[in-house]
Amino acid sequence: MDARADKRYAIDLPIKLDLGDGVMRNVSASGVYFMTDVDLKPGQALKFTLEFSGVQIGVISARCEARVVRVESLGAAQGVGAVFENIQFQRIPSPPG
Image (cartoon, rainbow, N blue to C red; front, side):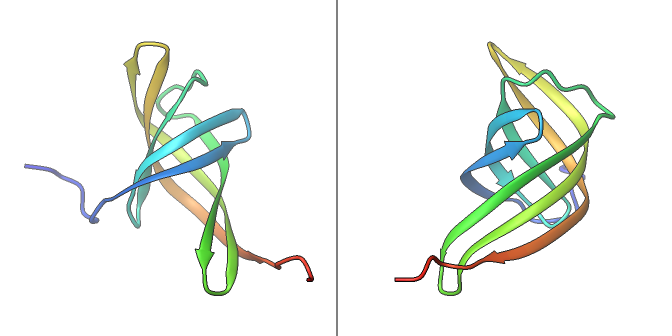
């Protein structure tokens, strides 16, 4: 039985870590799972940015703080599970024209 409390949504979205880049694979209200080649450890604090485009109001940027809860070695990459500690959303205005 899966102990996760929140429904997970599959998504393929770039994630901009302060330490490098990755690709988000799924997200829930409480956390995120992503692939990266950045060496991360359980318990480590993370800061990263997600950008959601294609929404009617323009691009939305989410600045996130999270804590790594698990790391899976997948060859040269790592699968990382992290729980959100803080999220700040910001609308990025479209350029004029």
